[in-house]
Image 1 (tube, rainbow, N blue to C red):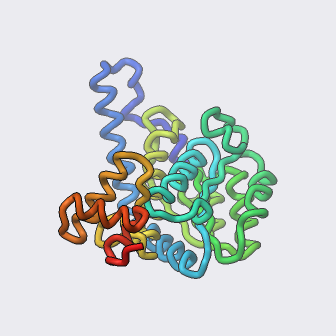
Image 2: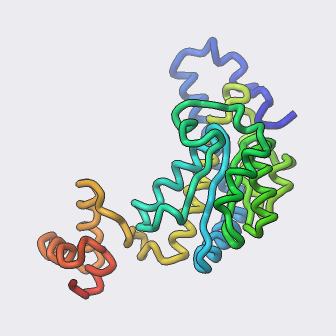
Length: 268
């Protein structure tokens, strides 16, 4: 039996626990997800290097998954442009059943290998990277997409919580997060999903750092799309240049609120 489908002995009687004990148990099990990601550090680092090298050569990063896995991929991809100032084409998320499935579950979408092939063959190119996300590691949709991507000449990565799964065996790099049995049996939106979120954050952030989108630990390409981010952009310029707020705003105004240009001293 798959580890992600086993019953967790700690939660066998969770339906009889008082609320505080229930919450404490769920959080205790979340630490397992963090440790699982730590144990997969070498594989995550290897994938970051592949993604960064691909981007340096003009390649792109794609995530693909069904259900929770697909939603997490789309989430991570959608946050890269505002955070790192990259185009929406550089990191893209693909979810089984299309974007309607972000808000309305259609879990049967994971069973179609043909749809996985269809959804990647028109967008993936040689040299891109496709990250297939599946907690159980058996989603036909994801496996079909991975196989097509390899045929095209893309690099392939798996994020899964079952080491010997078909997905794990079909990729160049397998990131195995051993999250084990869920508090609610089979509900991989819990620990497995938490581990997936942590891994995807590391993949995209690591690749962005390695390709120059971060200066020291500052978001040098941040886009000020709301008031909170505007304040953050001002703070970044002040931190880098050691100037007061008025001077930071003056430099940003002179450079269309582009942090790189503002700190370079090249006013437009």
